[in-house]
Length: 114
Image (tube, rainbow, N blue to C red; front, side):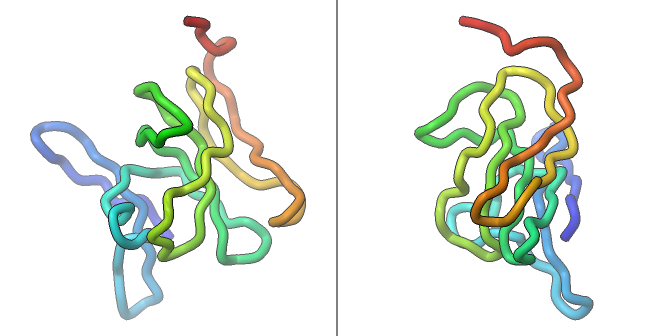
């Protein structure tokens, strides 16, 4: 799994991709194949992962990186794990896949209140 960086309309765009040595494809499927994302980390089960993305779902808003969880090649909406209006980096998972939680590096102050 890696982050591919491209330029679209003059803007840097990062997307998650996966390779097995013979194929190279988007990490997610369907409508989520083109989701922007980076900083992914595997969960202990080897199928799930957490990642950073500025994409928004019906459960989050804002133009900043949110932490999501998903399954490789899923065509389902990733689950929102952390939604803080602040800079977050390096997500990882602490504990079991079923009972753990995301841990992130926070590189800015407390979330902004609106």
